[in-house]
Image 1 (cartoon, rainbow, N blue to C red):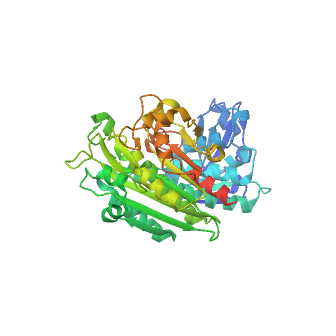
Image 2 (cartoon, helix red, strand yellow):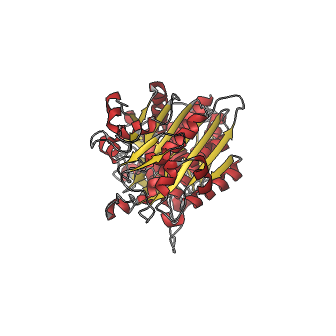
Image 3 (cartoon, helix red, strand yellow):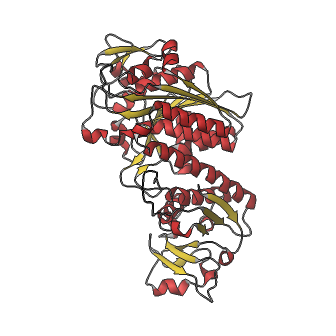
Length: 489
């Protein structure tokens, strides 16, 4: 785990393994470069401050800096360099400075804005960019950052800087845990194991946790979770978590799709479509990590989560295309495609949460390829029954760099999930698949304000991105935590 701190020491006096300083296009030297006396060295290397151009200078006798090394890093034009660009720039740098153990940076001084927001963005960039999943490596030659120091000026709001550093530490740890859960092979994380991870986290962080077993789910009529899970030898679970930060307030409710492995069931995927399907519990992981962060940050608000988990397998007892299941609360759905299973388990969780009359419900799910067609691999799609709530979520995503874009819950498409023999069917026509999937979920929230976040694109990066290597991303934990903190404020 990386630890974060805030300092107002002069850059040249900061003791760290490496001091990371920004250089703008020109070159135009950013905060701290002049104090180290390295301007000429950068120019002599024929560098101009273009994005990604870096010069590493190790300390020698007579140098004017206390760090073991200084990295002058090009970030492009000053006019386009904002908090989001800073987060990404430091994320790209992080993987190359892990060997130094302790990194310090003046990057928060290079952007105009509130001290806390800038310190948090810089810390997140270094912390998330340094993430590695090496649990299964027999030989691990990679080293990662253990400490990060964010350097502000003497005029900076030191209290805000310290609070932001702590907040970033909590968020980086939570996102990293979500990534670990998603990156873990499905054979090592069936529903019962995911529930055990939730219980262990809840005990450590002071959350209330209840795990519903298969027998309890049958007794209470959770037909969606049971139907999806009946083809697997690993029985399903429902994880319920409660955070109490304000005894008087109506809770925010959260849920996430927890398909521990998705073969497609009897509507089986081809091999290439199945090889990464351990990631189909990315929604559940994001909600577990959000609850972990909330428990540590202690906002004055109440939050409840109900997270369904099942394996979608084609065993002899698997549900068949054409079957009808009865969800928690009584609504029936016709299962025309067993590979449209995430909405079936989420339906049960949404109905349970709606019964609690929360202030709002937010669900996250790697739900549809259709959303990826619409928005690509970097952007989450948001659909819901309350435009103001959708706007809140989109705003939180913009503030944190977890990009979210609204899609219309077009009323005319509701008829596409009408069933001849049940209340609804689990697939619509070929077109508008992300929206018809959201309409299916909408049937279970009643009149509670609700937003569905389709994270099929950004939950997993095939090639890696600015904030981490290939694998799970932890989206949209930071956006969800920001939403909860804003609500509490």
